[in-house]
Image (tube, rainbow, N blue to C red; front, side):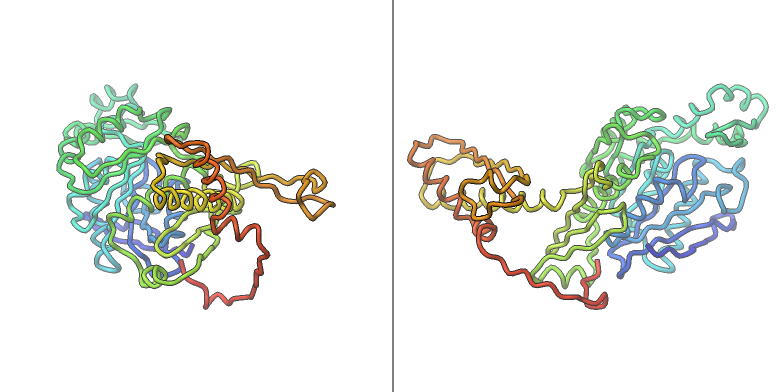
Length: 412
């Protein structure tokens, strides 16, 4: 993904170091990302989420808060409130130079910061938090053994993630004065809360607190066994994919390319450059991912090519059966299809013309629910074999392949 240096001044006139990650085509929307406490814009979670979002057409601004990374200022002079002010300054600069962020994303304490800053970014329509604390003073748990000394001495150097940071009493006083739950209740923006039930730093109860404080529309996604920093590439990619799909409803921001693609026929497939095999599959306004399992070197972030093939046959089978049942007024409550694919020796297939080597076998098991008699069930089984995709797979297929220049491809 192309990235541009995107430095800007904060409210104190200090220069903050930012990176603007851009998609290959005109951005559908802009997002602003806030990193975790004492982290920076280049932390794995921020970089990988930005990579995945740009592959989906969303530009992402990530930056170092005051006193961190390449940004000017002293970390010891910062507070939670100053971090919120840095976020507002980032949004203001983005608004002046490009387009205001429609999406705010925050990781850990950065999640609490975007919740606090959202009210000052009127163009933001959606907010996503990842492993965020419900109360900013939760972060003091990282240096709980030093809190009394900080209060007594005014400032103390503490080790966080193996690095020394100076924490001052002003920081403690500031987080103690925050009323984040009130700001969440007044958010008036779509909210998506990500949290792992095994988060080792910020407990899952924080997600419950945020979710209960928020008004609808709100959603919660469990990150299962992910760690706090989303150190596994697949976890960060998963978060980005869910954010992009969820935010689609609220952003109202399709690029001209996307609008044009929605009316045309066909399917476009393009590498996302996330992992070794991940592909973005676009059909009109719909987008899904194809990938390989981790055992094959992929991220396991989407259906494999053969999974997609089976899904096509299964969906077509169920739709065809449903149409027939409705036309004949049959008491079919529900139809389910389970499919598997395997390579078998040709000699094991009694009805196949090929007798040497291996051939593909698809096993399809169909379940009909409803008060159907034996004759009706038999007829539905016959109809299943008449679905268009089944006919295509069992007929002679002419696949023509041509080379297409990059300029002719549909940008994603």
